[in-house]
Length: 211
Length: 257
Ligand SMILES: C[S@@+](CC[C@H](N)C(=O)[O-])C[C@H]1O[C@@H](n2cnc3c(N)ncnc32)[C@H](O)[C@@H]1O
Image 1: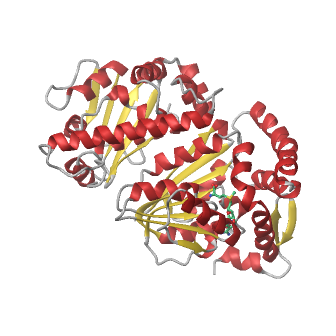
Image 2: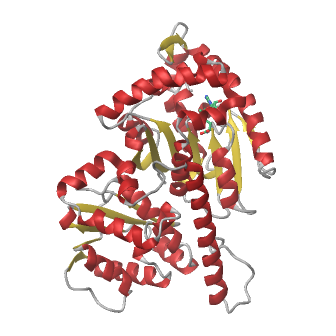
Image 3: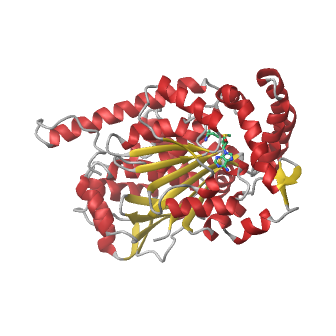
């Protein structure tokens, strides 16, 4: 079954924030524009597609065009593949069909921007600690078929519950503030990374300006 | 002029205003009447009506829009400017955000609220979504938040927004929609037809306007219909994102190159 669109949105938002940290990675996205990677998690009967566009990537429940490469495996083999970068071959338990090179490029890109799968949902959820998000993700991935369907039916509501979004039953204003704080913290981190990369002599940057 | 607009403008033809049928030419005036009367209390009512959740819905739109420094963004039916304010932070000094709305009172309120938050350099344009006065291919991103259901000729508005987008640019429509579960749907009916007009009466002293809001939500096309309308208007990769069980949906489509 295709992943719920809100889950795809969360993945897309986080992925793009990373891809846009590095102008050369965005150039790669533009070069690969229109090409598509389909990711399947058979244990959760979930699929999701990543399509490159000039400004980053779109993540959708289904591939809008025949996918160039299809990747299927356990959640942990997928996370390992993303964490390891391009150098280390395809991890055991991952089935890859189609253009292996495209997958390799994607892995190299996410490695270059320091993408951390555990933080995938963090920017969406603001103040929620990353390990709790990772827990939430694991639960999403480990769901049985029935649960997955329930998630699809309930969309954002369900995503929020399962990722411990604390907005429910709590003052929303307070939550918004936390989101803003987390956002600022992320901006500061991005600026710090850029300064480090540029040998400390760069003007303050948000990390998004060059994109 | 488009075919549907032509047929809608025929003498004697009607359209819906909430649950009432009114002459096509009258709907715009009536909608204007509603927003003239709610403008000053609009934000308070928004918070009350949605229990504050409208902020989360808007946050989702802002995140999904993925606006980057230097981009050009148009906020259609932008009212008091919530979305514009966020986008203006994101586009930075090299970018541009235009706040537009058909209603001068809402824009006046918007201008005041933006100035309160220190946003002063943002162009404000009074315009009908059906006939946007911008050159073709002007914007990277267009949003319309809780506005489309008030527009008389939605197809025409969608085409007009598509035209104003650069190829590959995106439109995000945030609008009330159809709850995906029956239970939620029933609760929501009670809420919107009983509680909402009551709150309208108590807080804004304007029951009729809030009754119109509840009715207009029911008359708005459901998720699939709106998606088809977007595809027909020239958008591709159109995706529906249900929020809060479909009470609200975000549609995002890209202008096909
Ligand atoms: C519910 S308010 C939404 C305001 C704001 N976008 C928000 O989300 O808070 C709807 C707005 O749509 C505007 N509107 C109604 N018909 C319109 C049209 N044909 N063209 C442009 N704006 C329109 C109204 O004036 C009003 O400001």
